[in-house]
Length: 129
Image (tube, rainbow, N blue to C red; front, side, top):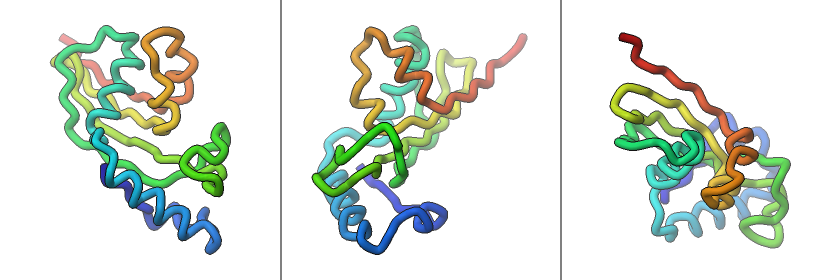
């Protein structure tokens, strides 16, 4: 999976964290799951498992801060996390702009996901007839 460090996020990274960020990016390159697959998982959780015909139109992953995690990626990663941002077509008539932390997506189990969904950024656009 390709993870980026966006220009706007560089202001939140200290010089001491630069090697840690670099290591997270390198480690995530070896992840077999794609950004699109993680976006699909987030959409399924947001729709409580009732989503079909999921088509990821655009997806990206970037380094971000998440106050709910501590040393998730390494012993020194602190509050660093990965933000998944995607535009998705769902159920053939709805577009979703969704954003979620990778740490939250990893916690999706299929039950009690509503708390995880409450941490996501979800914007829905539905076709009206």
